[in-house]
Image (spheres, helix red, strand yellow):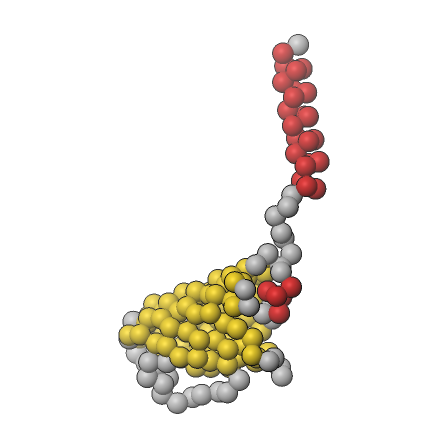
Length: 152
């Protein structure tokens, strides 16, 4: 009899867990404001010059959105020679999208140069203003990049 009671209790627990799943209030769909930041974005103006202390030629592709946050893969060129690639984590706060990014850069005789960037992006018309600051193995970088939707 005790095995029967334990088995029944276990089955009821499993069944009720499935019923309560429908009452989950955690958002799984992105906030509409976060959705606006989705997609692929690129620097509005290509800059191939040697930018000491700055990054340019950003390419930003959102890979996941949920609730008020998203994840993106990004690439950029820092110091005119370092080809950076990495991952950004972004969280919506009011009308700003606060973000942090980590990656590595290669080029100019360097390999696996650590890059850490952060900022607070905001829409300006149909473009994103992306101020950033951070560090690389060559020193600090900072600036503001304007991004447009890829293909526009």
